[in-house]
Amino acid sequence: MLKAIMWEKEGVYILDQRQLPEKVAYIKCKNYEDVAEAIENLSIRGAPAIGIAAAMAVALAVRKINAKSPQSLFDKLEPVFDRILNTRPTAVNIRWAIDRLKMLINKNQHLKVDELKELIIKEAIKIHEEDVEINRRIGEHALPLFKEKCTVMTYCNAGSLATGGYGTATAPMYLAKQKGINFRVFACETRPVLQGARITSFELMQAGIDVTLIPDNTAGVLLKKGIIDFVIVGTDRTVRNGDVANKIGTYSLAVLCKENKVPFYVAAPTSSIDLTIQSGDDIPIEERTPEEVIKIKNVKIAPDGVKALNLAFDVTPAKYISAIITEKGVFLPKHIKYINDSKKLEELRQNL
Ligand code: MRU
Image (tube, rainbow, N blue to C red; front, side):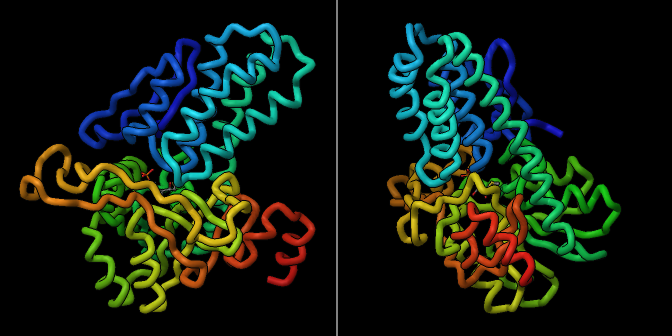
């Protein structure tokens, strides 16, 4: 399976997802600025993948910093943290990764600078490795949804290429395929930049999964006909009240699911959960260049001078979500606020 990002001695290799599916090409990032640009221009995208990229950007930066003490290393990293945090605002995974590294540095002030640098690099690699395992666990928790001959719909790309591996929404698909379960997937193309068409259909086809691509506006009729057993998507940020931000259009799909009584599931690593925010109304929503709406793959599809609005994400209120599937188990959106309370989680599990 193709990897979205790889740490190598000479730098960080990022799969240039803008060129998929026509071309599989990696960008070699030698410094943190290269990684920041790759995040901004969507060479790497997907909440967990950009969290990993953020950590690796910091790891690249520490190699180049001359510092006499751990505190001075931290101080010299401040502009790096700021640069990375300002690349894309909606996915909380970037902040999660940066906070994890900041904590690591603060806890290890007794180390020599070189030892601390080594520790930071190891931690970035660990964040990547852990993400693969977390997604596999999400896949196991979601697997019981995959009954023989079921039909599933997904949106955008919450796939292997949006993460360290397996994906979140796609993790149960890969596991179901391994177990020999027959199922098919409808992938919505996901305007404006077509992550569903270019990336999800590509990676599912590579894995031999039966995938059918549909224009976004075909979802409604399939849901109404009753041929979709459930919809499963990813998220960039899930907040205390169970509201989730995900790719623009997710909200419409969730409303269509409710109207047609089709379960709507969200697959989320806990690194995408932000308990500092109470409601989805307060999630920062990225607005990208109108160019992405006016052009498809650099071909203009609208008149010169037309105005265009390009909100990259929307918020799906908790009331439309049947369950949120994390590496810790399957939860109702209203229970997300307990995600760090292991006693409460155990109690909820027993009462399921
Ligand atoms: O703009 P993108 O391609 O980064 O948006 C990605 C999504 O919306 C994904 O669904 C989300 O990040 C979850 S990825 C597991």
